[in-house]
Image (cartoon, rainbow, N blue to C red; front, side):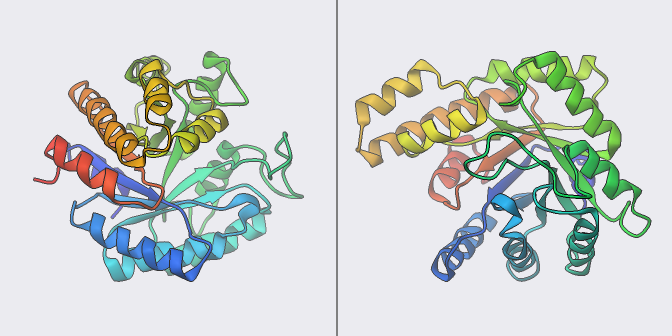
Length: 293
């Protein structure tokens, strides 16, 4: 099912994000988590891409398995990293053959150790170019719904919020159907972002991205990469609980529950959970919010 149809239904749309594991054991555990989360009836799940596009085959395998065997609608990440136009066309053909109808179209991050993104020959420099290319393909232009990324606190490489929003408008105007935001921990950033986007003429659903705090150093790492501010409440909890994982997880679930409730009460069209291939925190947040019912 296309994500545009899902959002038109008018109910909060709940989705999860997974990443392709590096080992067979990790992949087995991922499918176990996906099967557990299926009980929560998510609208869809998305599956990410590795650096340098090196898990593209894994992404295709995982989205096919989740959609066609486990039975959850999927969206495959597709990035500009290391791919020429011809290679992108080949990937689109494989996705269509696997009956995948939704794509998360991203530029992707520079390879580890590099500070600047450099496209390959005959490749794309920006996600907007990727979206425009997909829409221009005679065979696949209308075969997919496209999700793009939004940054409530600004892209790490563009801290000018006005200019960053201009970049989002270009992606949406090129043919995106929805926006999933980068993770954030203060709802004010999301609501301000949506207000500015609407004033700029962006009308597609803008879905908040949620990452429950389950491990202090991990959250510190992701926040630094994403340019996301960590509120004092979270910092104090990380310092107070240290290596006490059970306590930090309980705190993270409580914080994310309050955050999600505020977002839904404020009119967010849904929630997109960055699960890190785990189900415990997401299942508990679901229960706290009454979404499982």
